[in-house]
Length: 289
Ligand SMILES: C[S@@+](CC[C@H](N)C(=O)[O-])C[C@H]1O[C@@H](n2cnc3c(N)ncnc32)[C@H](O)[C@@H]1O
Image (spheres, rainbow, N blue to C red):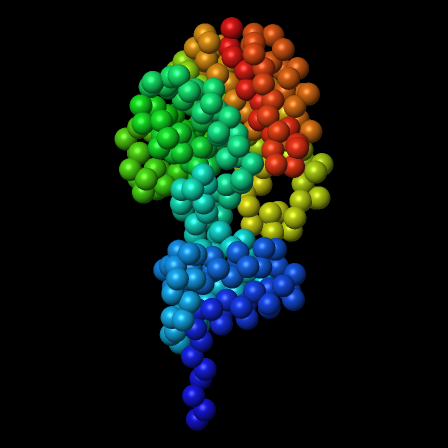
């Protein structure tokens, strides 16, 4: 019987990348690296430091299975069970949205707004994987965070991430519906900051999204029937949710700035809009009067 070829890390990466390019897989290099790193239990950098490492037959079987899932369209982050946000590792699965790089900019903008606060109280609405709430708790060691979501499944993921990062004691998880009149009472407050990356894709736009987003990511995390429902509810509850002088900070749909500006035209001052890498309006913040 002919002996099966023993692959090294570098050979396997090169071959897989070429295969992913041929199959028109998004980010072929990153996909190959993340999947192989996941199977071998190595960080991406370690793959290159240890590039001659032989891949065992059982690792090869596991890697091929992961590649097949990727070819079927499953996002690499769900296959690997991890995504990186602001340099931190978060466990993710199909119960939560995969954190996006644009949201890192929103978070950065929020932290600038909080720069002088020593121990702010923060409410994150629609916490999902917990990426915003947990990163704020990590970056602002005095902060006390409330992380709310309507999805009990998402809250389970967020709690797991908070425990993994050692900040679970400073985060209160609340299952609550931001569109319901009981929301403010359930989450408590008032807070020094309310931050939210709410669902903002209008139902009419759903069909235009990438297949892998529609098929694998939770629709609950993405769609608001008309696009603005969550902003309207949160702004309406702001007088109860926010302290006077507190910061309201939203992630925006690329076309959403004008609509959200109108919502905060009274009762707020110092409105700032920040653009993302693609020059789309992406974050809006303002101060409660
Ligand atoms: C766009 S995702 C944001 C997730 C995470 N904060 C992030 O930035 O990656 C929106 C989140 O809002 C939650 N959500 C949807 N409807 C909600 C509602 N009525 N009340 C509270 N949260 C809701 C979803 O479960 C989802 O986790």
